[in-house]
Image (cartoon, rainbow, N blue to C red; front, side, top):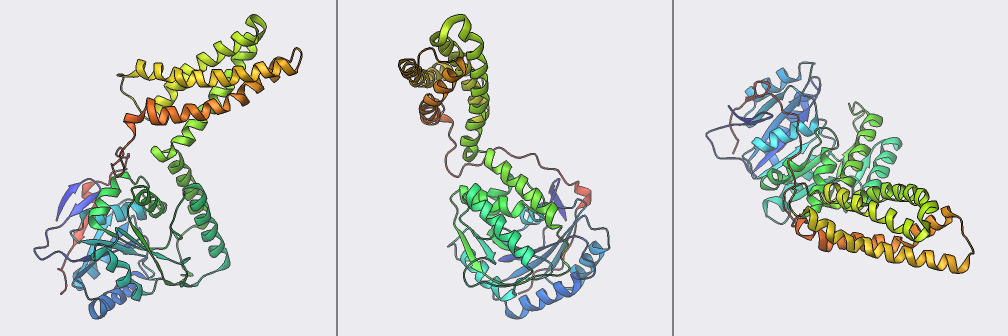
Length: 407
């Protein structure tokens, strides 16, 4: 075995690479691992038409699961075992998929809750080149599912959140039955930050944002009563992951722009109310709006559009003054109408009217920022984002046992 980097492993097996690598992530599954792997091995040997490998990816087990995995790898041809010191299903899949030499990488839950007859329809569109990602779905028409009401309700609510918040076009992000073309996986994995249960959702969202083709397959699925998933803590972690995807990358720009706008609004109100008694409503509006516009442009440059280099800073500020002019024009118009209708309005009402009327200028400002001021900094479709900060797994914690590829 050779290790290519911390947190990953590669193997020179001396035989032709398999077409499909089925990864089974495990954590403290010593009791149920062997019957599941033997059942999967028998199925693939007798009924699967393509060359294959089973990779057991243990992550941080403390109950003897690594020893069971290594024994199975030594006994069964076509079975490999990767042992990682750190817990986390997402991290285990990253390690196994990155090091795989297969054309298609897949994974399934160790309890084999999904009917194995769905494996061939899952990987066929990827082998043919028709699709990039394939997922099993318990919520697609035609799926047959047996599970408790609580899990059903949580699953449907979570996927509804994904559709509304992240505009997900897939129905079931969490089903433990997925496959990806290996080249696609190597392209997406550097962008996926999560190493735990949210890994599936983040992988799919990033694939959708890259414009990749995702095929969804209805599956027959039976709930495992001995599941080790802690529903509430996992749901909370998933919601935090959703919030992170909402505000990161170019798809989170409207959210970051709105947050900066909220801070700018508060600063404008304070400045206007402080200046109003000194210079009157017109100059108070100009000065308050002008100073917050400069800070707003700088903040959007750094956080909304993620431009960090010093060059073009003055040009961006100068172009940002056009957005400032739009807001100034609409807010001044609103103040003028207010003074025509109301004799000596109070300062708070003036400020609120200026803000409301400046809303149209804010919309114009965002479009100017996106399409003109920072247009050259829009990442082209399909380009990778900055590499996330991943927690490395020490090289010495990765071990692999291999006995070759069947067929």
